[in-house]
Image (tube, rainbow, N blue to C red; front, side, top):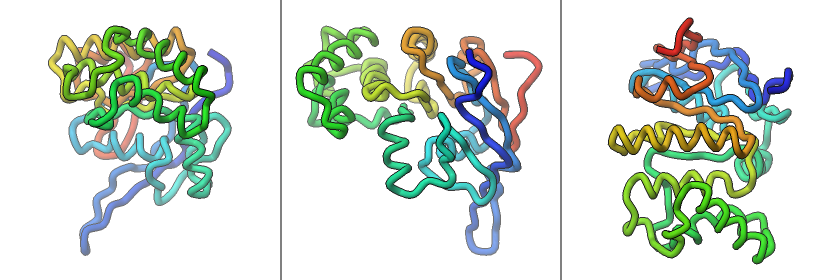
Length: 231
């Protein structure tokens, strides 16, 4: 790891309002993440994990504070700047997989490369490499409905790596999977952090997966702290 953080979060605050009621989702959150780290964001459902990841990935804006990812001040970017950030710097993995049903595994992985107009030969070679990397070289032509939940999440992970992101943001990526498959997916993410040189922030409330992380950030009622141990 280098001395310079890849992710810097400073004084982040987010409040949701429903009529006269206010719900504070993030309370003065500050931390940093260094290149090459796999950091688990642990917390109960509704604790603010998704809100935090959405701010870091540029999917939502905070009410106060700032986020810097790979030198880009996310909280100050225009809509066009945010689109470029999500296309080139940050890769996303969601609990719901987010695959396009009518496309094959290979076509799903290739979508982000089409958006940056990667040459066809280079795109096809990278698609094959990424699907092999996640153990799906035998499933390139299958559509999502022909794959198991674990296989669909592997396709989603391969797609998230399409444009060589610096940061991988995974929001409950094992939430729809059984415990054994969930652990395999978490182990895959850890291996990819090592082999692909990416940094990963993974939200989970599954204690059995926490030990696979380099660090843990605990979020409770919108406040973040780093526990003394991983368990």
